[in-house]
Image 1 (tube, rainbow, N blue to C red):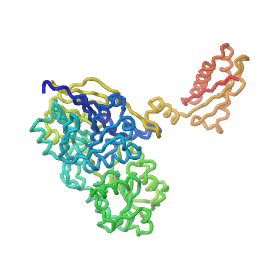
Image 2 (spheres, rainbow, N blue to C red):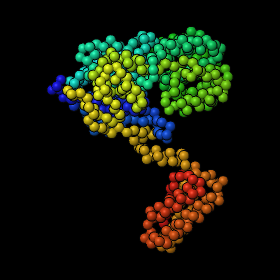
Image 3 (cartoon, helix red, strand yellow):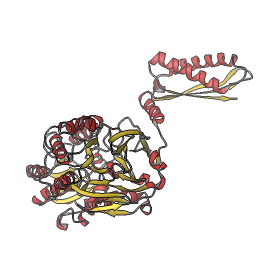
Image 4 (cartoon, rainbow, N blue to C red):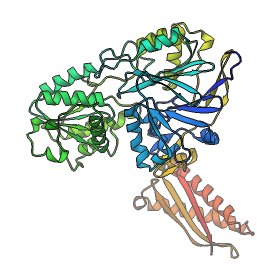
Length: 557
């Protein structure tokens, strides 16, 4: 090992936030990506549709990328592939379900020709270039999730993927702690990269099957009423339990929302989801059925503005009109940042008289991420020599690092890393060796990277303070104002109700513009525009204590 070339790991996303998960492992000059995910925008990212990892460093590597392993089928782990494949071409490796879910976005982007989808199974050991990879089954909130052990010249790097230690999963597929233990006892885990999402929460996560009992009881309690349930479209096990409860009470199941319909069809075709044809109907056909015989499984658990549930709450759905005879079960928990959107949807539903059940009042959701006691168990079995917490906000990484130390990893062998950090694994250990670009890459409409922090800052000003446009025409030779100034405003004051204020502003700007013309014989229009901006800004701030965006337009006559 001492003579072997060092191995590098570069973190491009997922360390310090929930989403954008992406890491690059380098062995013998080749690069293997572990996930390539997106993040949904925060409330202050006005107009932004998606947030991607910064691909600058990857694009510089050209054809060194051997492939990308998708650990599981959530978009925060594969959703950015359809954008990276616009620039680069490489294979994608994962379980058949993960590949099928990733394929949807890639196919929509017309980029299937730029990749090869390589399926792998539980406990497979496959080589991709210099990467010797072992795929380990783990339990998560989407079926067929994987951890990956990469056997390198500098020892084994174990990436946990997203996981929990569910001893009674819906499909019976357990996190394979025995395989992890075997690696630990054989060659050892040189470096562990592990999911930190729930590291600051004590105890154990609830089993997914415990949700099924709660759902059954709710269906019993709401007999005779139409039931609409929501969950993530990728949460096939939750969909299975909802369907089981519905069928137990002789209800017909219908899906609502494009992603839900697509994923249910896909999972049934793959044999992962079992709903008999006799109990499955199209959403267009349930209107004539007795309400107590209907269960709708819908998208919109996060209160997304155009989702099926939000449209129903706003009485804008063309499929269902909800009223006091309906019950809505939100079988999910709001992602951090989505709480307000979910609350608005619940308020809208209640205004319609709908009975709403959510995770705050019933145990209708179970997390897919390990909590502190499970993470300690994992660490005790993996026994890593070095440990880097991944996947989580910074507070989650700090909590996970503390757990690592508690479970016997030496203090100086626990590294807290952030997006952009680059570490080297060599004979002496692990150390940070620099940084690469790792900022946010924004997707706005069809554009990728067309906007940056400056544009977002302008949008915040427009949203919070408004805009004032000042248009003036000048005759430089005569040193006079021949047009305006005309003032157009949106979001500062309502023009129809503030004519006196706008007249005073015009007079103020006109006077300063005349003075500037008198002292500006060269006719520098840009200088005059600066005068208009300054004078308008001062007036607006003095009169209203607001700071809207000022847009001066000065034209020569």
